[in-house]
Length: 106
Image 1 (cartoon, one colour):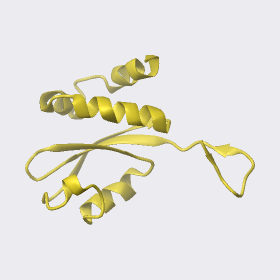
Image 2 (cartoon, helix red, strand yellow):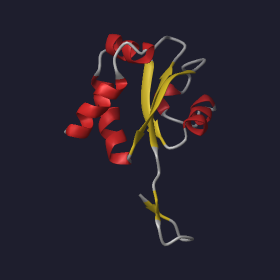
Image 3 (cartoon, one colour):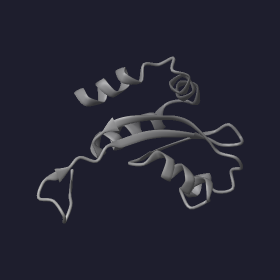
Image 4 (cartoon, one colour):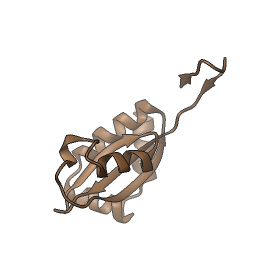
């Protein structure tokens, strides 16, 4: 939740998990509140250092996850997955909702 100076109410900011595929077929995992903006930053070399100089980038996966704390936990979990597991997530073979539900229960 973010408090804006213009409103007395709190505004809910929605977070997304995303995976970017590099030219050498690696998958980078990140979180953001604006996937198109963040992807443009990565393409321009102004995002994560891990993606700089990695050639053409493709947005392989993105999914709304909700609150920032959940997005951080999910990002950590996905980064721990093997390449094969990440590929299954991108292909839709693993139920993302199941992974998300497990984290919400933690």
